Length: 380
Image 1 (spheres, rainbow, N blue to C red):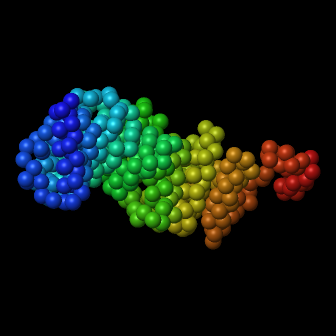
Image 2 (image 1 turned 90 degrees about the vertical axis):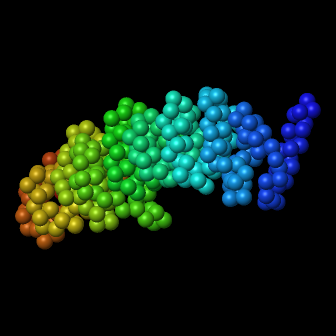
Image 3 (image 1 turned 30 degrees about the vertical axis):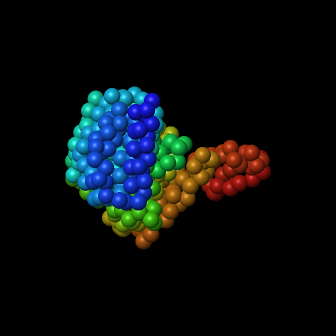
């Protein structure tokens, strides 16, 4: 009991020195005891060391970051599976170590994230913050993360978390991956190959799309054959709405992939065949930008690929995706602009029947065809 009171008294003295930023050299013997306490999971010792690491050179001389890191790692390995305050403090301590001594990031990454330690079995903010610190301090760690199915899936899953702080840290990590074509390509491939990761693939791509289109985040993903086009195009052709959306966002900034017309037509066909409304709308959006930027060559390619009927068939009212019709109209406008062949092609089609909309039906209305083939609305 007396020893415990003595230790608490010593810690209080240390905390005073921490607050007053006085040199710790005169406190002989105490640093060793604090390190021992941290290794055993003493919350006050861990908290003190975490604050000391944030204070600067004065305290880093008394408590070497490498030694502090070792103490925290030893405790975490001993307390594997625990989710108590001490574990949280140890993770936060390592975060401060990496932020102040980036040269230690590779070793901490190896000890924490590439060991048998199941660090992300339960997601929490301190762990994601440490993960972010490591991949920002060490490019090798960043690439290793982008190819680790378990870690990447766990982090990506947090993007849709109801915990706002958890979702924010996951978005910060995703930003790091999105800023590098190499990391983004590796991440896409990793998520594709993993059953758990594939469930998060849409969430990941939509998050990147949000970052790409945000006014506050200056990202420009290089969509070239050597980096992303292969993977994204394959997903898009198969009707993956998130991939079509990302390619469409890139196209809206003038960053158009070489085979965008073919990708959008294939994606549109897959969406029609699979009744994938969201993908259908995304494919039309990509096609609209592709034709706008590609000019007459793109218009003729759509004609050759038989894309006109696909676009026209998407002009009906869809209650689940009202924007689909608008994208179709914009596509037709861009396709017809200055191109008589396309105009004649469209004029050759006839409306066979009027599709009914649940929304119109609820309002007591219906669509019908007049004798001259025009589509109109009337009371049901």
